[in-house]
Length: 145
Image 1 (tube, helix red, strand yellow):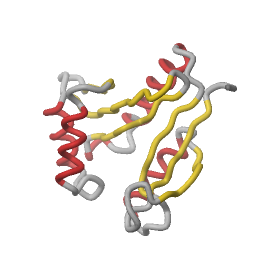
Image 2 (tube, rainbow, N blue to C red; image 1 turned 30 degrees about the vertical axis):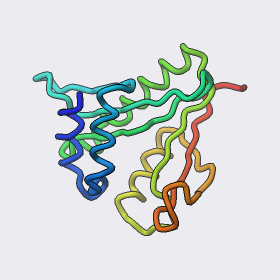
Image 3 (tube, rainbow, N blue to C red; image 1 turned 135 degrees about the vertical axis):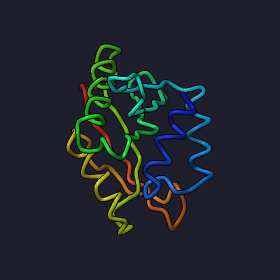
Image 4 (cartoon, one colour; image 1 turned 120 degrees about the horizontal axis):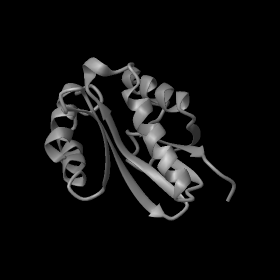
């Protein structure tokens, strides 16, 4: 799956333009839980990587969709599949981190809008990634704790 992640990241450089971060995502695809959407020819067109830190939470480590298919339900299908699996496993919360709104990047405004459209709620903006890269933590409640 690392090759598919690398190929997809290259189609959306305005979101994924940091080579060191991309290398980390590509390496993560070798070892962490991976969900995919494939087209009719079997080509991977969307990838979601998942971290499971605790039994009650699953974190979207990466979600990336082929540029030409964005806005066509691929990302929503990935999140819906993860959500169904998470509920079956008794997970109470999904989490995702993204660039916070205090950074004016228009692509990440679209990213936050996507996450909100599938039920994630902003929880906190932090300096987790450094002073110049505001990290917005978003959560999606699935069940009461």
